[in-house]
Image (cartoon, rainbow over all chains, first blue to last red; front, side):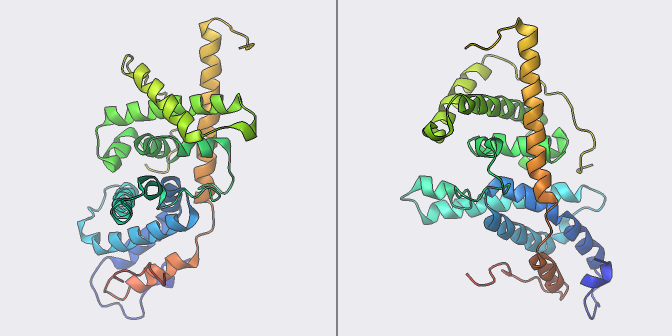
Length: 219
Length: 63
């Protein structure tokens, strides 16, 4: 679509509106992908992206031109996701487990339409590891940008990504060793694996994952 | 357990190969969503924002 498509009939505000809006629209696909990875669910992901666009629009004055708009939007989206989830927790304090799954993660609607083993295993990772892995490993963000999105330092992101990779591998290996239908409680298995990995990684320095993707969309 | 237990080098290589496969799969999932057509809702939402006042809670179209 062209810029004129989203031009208002009357534009009298001296805002940088059209450009900003065009940029927002161009980034929607990436926001949807990140949202899908967070919520695990098509609809709540798209709701989340819409909330993000509204928030971004409302605070467009705080965006510093020349900085990474994509990272800025991802930050908003992630904040929104966690604050929605906290609200869900408050609303359903009697069922922490259900609340935890609330903004998405339905069993049958995976964030990638297909229910690959990797997608399923990904859902078993702790949030902080999953988001770090997605941002860096799939989204093409630099460790630096990922760190600013999740608000921690670069070293922490590196270690989360490394642990996420290790955990995914361990989960997948464990799954592979069982026939599909007698995979017991995946959550249980994952907690088990995570505990083991935690014990391991407190002893070792996390390995620095090789940079293997330079063409990232994130710039 | 009947896996060919090569010395550490081979094993590490095998792990790296699997890690790469997982990395490809992650990107495939992510890019799969990126490449989906964007529903009109998003354009509609942005268009409404043109009107100056931000649509406060626009995304709750119904509920």
